Length: 321
Image (tube, rainbow, N blue to C red):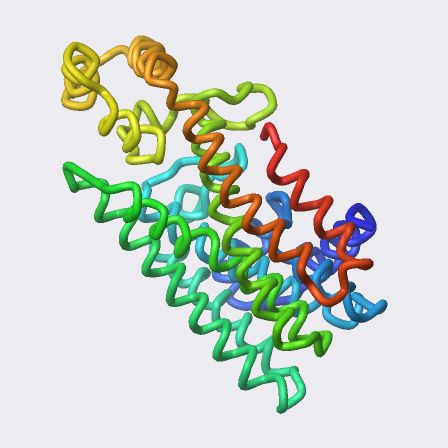
């Protein structure tokens, strides 16, 4: 089921028409949408819809709209992060320029609303309200993430809330949208939203973990990048709170260093993480959120049809890239 849904999603995305002129505005959109990705969000929408109805093709354009919104956020995030690469290719602002990337992202968001306008009136208001709440949350999460860069300390609670907003609420909306479009019971719609949020938090914690402990060939990006950038991930926050004596002093020295050998820094801080048991603590926290998500899925009114969705969630929890 998952593979067939992914095939449908890819065909829909490649067939999307956002606009044609000026080409300098629309070509960047076609470019970023063609770079691939896991397509997790539209897949969740189709899987949630299929819990109640058997014709997911009916909502493909709405599922693809979620992927367009996701890529809009990536395009703008890349500008803010000054990122040179996205999925191994030049980011839009590097390939074109920053102003074009901003405008292309803006028109992507407008086109998402255009797609939703095709919804039946009785669903339109609800979907737009849910989407607006989600989109505002993503922006709030991104702002918190940027503010954390200049703060000396960030608490575990603050970090979890940030990734809930920046990453997880969109997974929650993706699942909830599928249920809303399929006229699923209101109680299931809420459960699916909670499931997506909890799975999303677990997903990001796993991503933090893989950044340090992942296999570079499987992970697909630089292992240790968060360490090099002093990014305040769950691992670093936990290490700062647990380190004492010489360990605390060594950690502070690396965090304060302006000139350093990247490989030595990654090796040294990873060694401290090992000594402090940070890997197992992060795995435990990620699994707590995954289990909360699974619990919501197991309590849906359509338990008998939830296996493909639960299996996909399990695959997310076990991923190594």
